[in-house]
Length: 130
Image 1 (tube, rainbow, N blue to C red):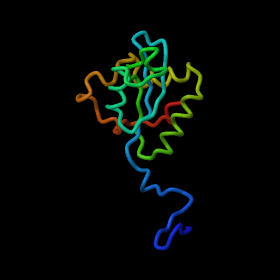
Image 2: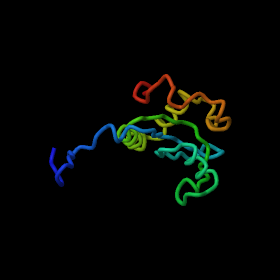
Image 3: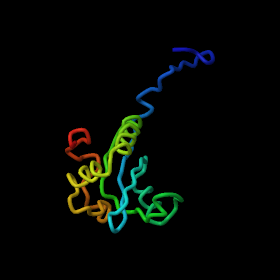
Image 4: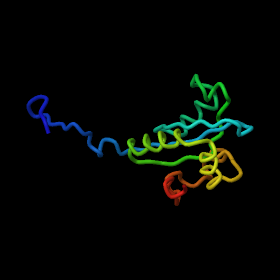
């Protein structure tokens, strides 16, 4: 550890304690399921609202991507970022296989949000599904 000023210690690697929060990697699609969007957020409810009501300019708004078809919860931001990057590197067929393994009918997982199981209580991990 190195000291920036007396009484203050820091390391070059951030503490895991500071990075353990709630993060979600998610896949959105449109009504026709013709386009996919992969994103990451620390507040899934807020982000879905932003997508639904066009609060965020860009790809998702342009293609009306507002249906949540896949989501995974993470406690560590680095794990969430790694998952997002991994998924973005996959071919479309592999992304579809991931979605259909847990959501074969491509239902909007947020339609009846209060009736859904807690997102972080899913019995699978992305790595186990492929």
